[in-house]
Structures are given as structure tokens and as C-alpha cells.
Length: 287
Image (cartoon, rainbow, N blue to C red; front, side):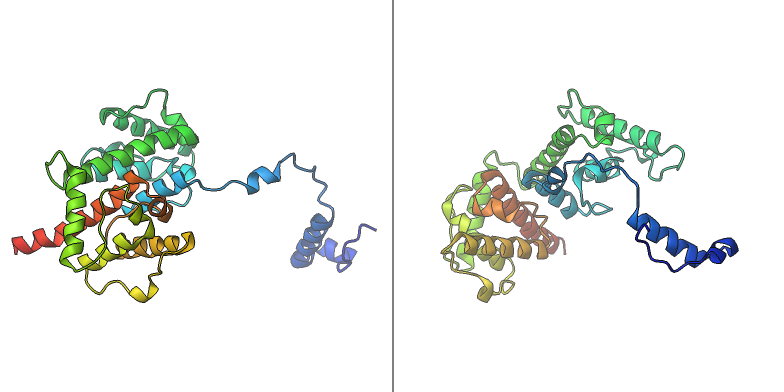
């Protein structure tokens, strides 16, 4: 009468035939779940997408080799463990690991995660981060706005440290541009940039040529497109960023940042390549 498949007999129920009873109950539930229709706007759920800002932060974290891999920014940071790794990368020794819950007790899991997140905020204040109105509970709850506020300051601190390691010059941007052009010229490349707002950067060609200048022969120019359309530029940018990462450069900018010539993000790409190029030179001097 209910439209369920009749493959079980009363005797099977009495005798407790496990598989038949399980199949019967599953079939009964599938046809007549007797559940109220959920009051959920499925359109809102389907439209949840990662923003470019979130993707940039996630790429940055993963480029640093944090573990586990960050797939979704808010839930993956909610126990504080990823953020502790970032603090330790930016300023080695900043985290007192004895104070960190690395594994969670099943009965105390919530409180242990909250203690971690409270320590995350305390460390941020010691780093002079602006964390007004941010508590450990906000990180633990996955509050998007407040979590992003902390992560942005972490990435900013990392980038400033990276740039300061390139030299003591007050004109770091000018030094990077000069290095890029000298590297391109030395390799016989025609590409040049006047700064990090140069429109030619949108083609992806200066980045691609620079990578080939750093490691000759690494670029397959048959894969490089003549940048006539935005799609061509995007393809070049994706290829350039992919090859930069293959060189070992910790690039966390997105192809869109290259095509749209976002100055700050463009600068980080060239800066990490400059830093990456200096490493083997310093090693060779030691040997």
C-alpha cells in the first residue's frame, strides 16, 4: 500500500534475518521518511563560493607548507593549529608549543580548541596586530570577518619580513624593478617593466620571460600565447604562476592579480622570485 518493495515475509522479521530486515527498513525510509520539509533557502547554499580574497589567503598558507592542507579557510583554522604554524614561520620561536593542544580529547575537544584560539589572539597582540573586538571564540566559531582580519595581518607581516630580507634599502620597490629589468636584459629578453602598475604585466610575458631568465630553458614557449584577448592573458598568467611555483617560489597571488595588474600582489610575485634567485647565489658563495 505504501509503494515499498515486497521482498520480506513475516517469518523473516520474527527470525531476525539481518540483511533482509535492513533492506526493508532502508526501502521503507526511502519511500516514506516522514520528515518535515526543511526550511532552507537552497539558492543561498548553492551560491556559497570562495571569494578571491579567501582564495589568496588559502593559497598563501598552502604555499608555506602548512599541515593539514587548507581547503576551507574558516573551518580549517577553527582549532588554531594552522595559525600557530603561520606564527612560527613568520617569527620562529614565537609559539610556545607546550601551551598548544595538538590533539584533542573527545570529551574536552570544544574547550581545548577554544584555549588554542585564545592563545592565537594573545600571540597576535604580542605581535602588535590590531585585534580590537576579536576574541578566541570568534576564530573558533569561524567568524568570517574577524578571521580574515587576523589572517590579513599575518600575510602582511610575512610579506614585510620577506621584503626586508631582500635588503636594507628604503626603495625596495625600485630595487625589485631594477633587478627584474637587469635579469631580463641579461638573458636577452625583450620584456621590461617600468613599475608594478605597468600595463605590459597584464600580458603575463614579463613574468614568463623572467622565469626563463632565472632558469634558462624552463619555459616552453610553445605554450605561451600572443596576448590578443583577455583569455590569452589569463592563460599566460596561469602558466607563469604555475612555473614560478615549480621553481620553488612561494607565489600566493592569483592569475587575476596579474591580468588586472594589482600592484601589491604583483610586487609579491616579483619579490619572491628575486628572493628565490638570491638563495642559490648565497649558497654558492658559501661553498
